[in-house]
Length: 113
Length: 153
Image 1 (cartoon, each protein chain N blue to C red):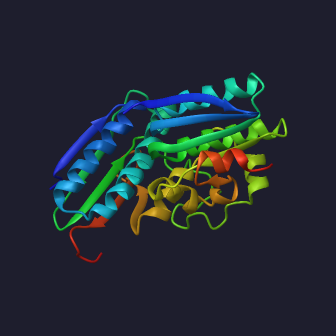
Image 2: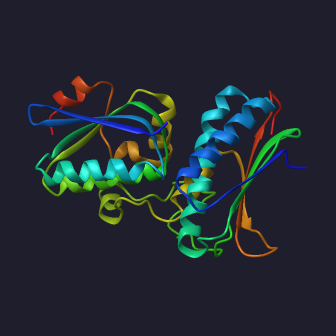
């Protein structure tokens, strides 16, 4: 399965819903999407990973890159994920301390920065 | 004898091919279902690392993935890149004990995780892993072993 991306806004938040597999092949597509959003002035981004079936360290790198870009504009990058198999890589790499991870898009949108 | 021997060119798209084949063979061999996600991720990390190395150092050479399922399920990923290119930032077998804090982490890395990060993921994920120079030529072997059925490692 390839990567699917869909973007919508709620107030000043931009939600990127990701589906499929984020790996060395597909990660560049997500990176471009995040770069485009920041270039167009979206600095508060919620990445919804609930539709993601696979995420590896290449994908983590893209999310870290996105977080750096929004932070440069005092923005935020929040993740939505409840799937244990996806959360595991954040946990073992210690990146749960780097990313705010929420149980739902509503919760992530409501979170204050 | 290896059950399945797969060769892929240094093509990011074929990392997924390797993941799919490894997971299918693992499932057939009787590895516990709970280990399949771990196998998928570990094989993906090992092959991503090999593809990155080959893209830089050996773009026309093939990466080999050996899958064996006699008694244990063993995946060996062999690249033909130079040995010892991993940063010392993370010791693959020590995992992420020395990972810097979030701010330092963000100050240091962007977009691409440091060389060695994928091996550290493997080291944290897989109980039985061996990473060593191939010895019989260039390249590194990443050998990962999982029990079959309920057998203990």
